[in-house]
Image 1: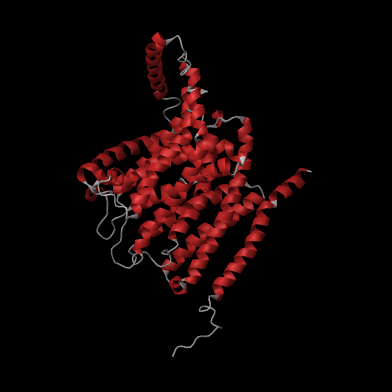
Image 2: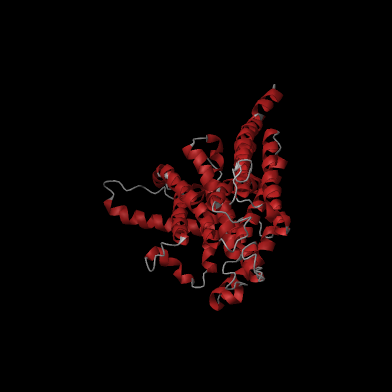
Length: 46
Length: 417
């Protein structure tokens, strides 16, 4: 009989969840990084 | 206004009460002036002996002869297509890749007419023109790859609709989208001809046409990907996914934006005398905005790719040369240009953004060719490579499109507000 273990990250799709959480966190940082350019440019102008 | 300066088209006395006897005369006078004006505009302008003309004209001439031979002697004469490889370079590069690059039109019209971001208004007309021509030439190249090209009308005229096929959707969408893009561009043509009343009417239809066009684009960009869903056993598992339609749609956004950056950069150099200084100054800001859009879309695309990869448990495929090829496409031509766009936009570096746009375009070409040609039938000994005739005809199509684009831009008020 095949055993099922919750520790197996592939069977529980743990990697997918980790990747998704990483994506959401990184996406916030990434968008902030891109849109910080205007502030920087304005500061340079001053 | 380009038209009015030449022959004052459309300035004839309008049809008013009391002028009934003159209606016919006015009409025929207008028609006569119209044809005179068109003939005048057909005359070449500028220098003939430019490097581009010297390279493109012989290729177009040879390509045209080869095109005739292809239709007279059939696909076997002109292509390396076979039973194993029924779709080749014309579908893989011209149609699948060309349509992805035309994605800039629906993205920019959405941003300007639906989101009301006026910053991008100066590039709307040229982007729509680019999209229209891309569809006319690249989607039109679909005819080249049909063994019985006269059957192209079947999905339209009802002689065996074939509505079970994804190509039915693609055929109708291409047709409707070309008409929609023509409608979006038609105010510029009316302005060129000096038909002010018609221009106003056509302008009032623009928003409706844009919304219809965006809907069509989303569906047929993904529809082109859906064509490959039936080839699960033929495409390498690293490239095949049930999400191909979504990948095709998302990648068409940054493919289109990269194309707009690339084409806009060249246009602003070649047609600098047609662009006023205000638009020249605004163009850099537009590029930065487009780079941000491309970076964000590529970021999402990359993670979605990674998610599908992990979900499919495809680690074992990374160990051979296909795996390295896949990583080169996904990391080298998606993730790296994504960060380059972000870095360039943040640090206001146009050089990095332009390089990223070129890398992204190469990535899109590679992705579409990987799915449609390179990894197609990867598990059989037979290999497809395009014949020289296929390549010359493709070059002819590209050069003809550039010639038409140049003709339109140098005559119609494409860069005017």
